Image (tube, rainbow, N blue to C red; front, side, top):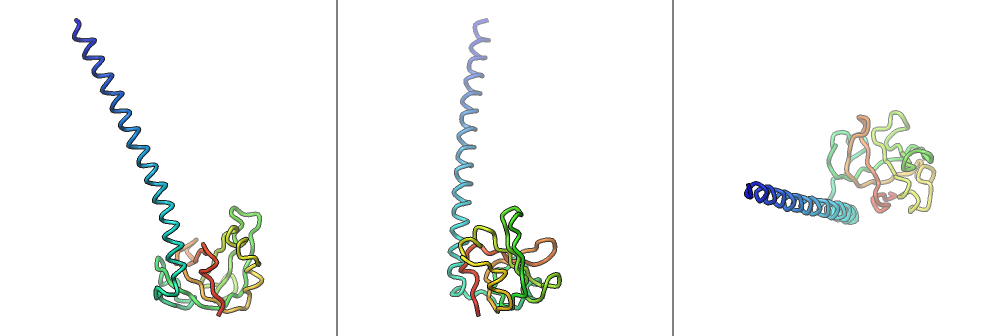
Length: 156
C-alpha cells in the first residue's frame, strides 16, 4: 500500500515538471514571434528605403493587377483621393490611373503615415505624376499598394 502514494507522487511531480516545460516552451515561442514581427517590420522598412537601388520593376497602373504579390514601382497620375478621418486607422485612398471608381490602382496611406507627411496627399498629389514603390495586393478584388513610409512615394 505504500507504493501507490509514491507512484501517485511521482506522477504528480512528473506532470508539474512537464507543465513547467510546456509553459517555458510557449514563452519561448511568444518571444520568438514578437522578435520576428519586429524584424519583419525592420526588413520591410529597409527594402522600401533602398527600393530605387534594388531595381524594382516599373509598371503602369493598368498593369498593376497582373503583378499581385510583387514588389514593384508604379508610376502614373493621381486623379484624386479621399481622406477617411473617422474610419479605423484614418486612411487616405488615392486613385491612380483614372478617377474613382474606374481607378486601376488604389494607394492606401494610413493615418499615421499621413501625419508624418505633413500635407494632405489627396489635395497635394491630385493631378500630379508620382511613382509609388511597394507590394501589390488585392483589397476587395482591386489592386492596391499600402504606403508604410513616405519614402515609397516620389513626385515625377
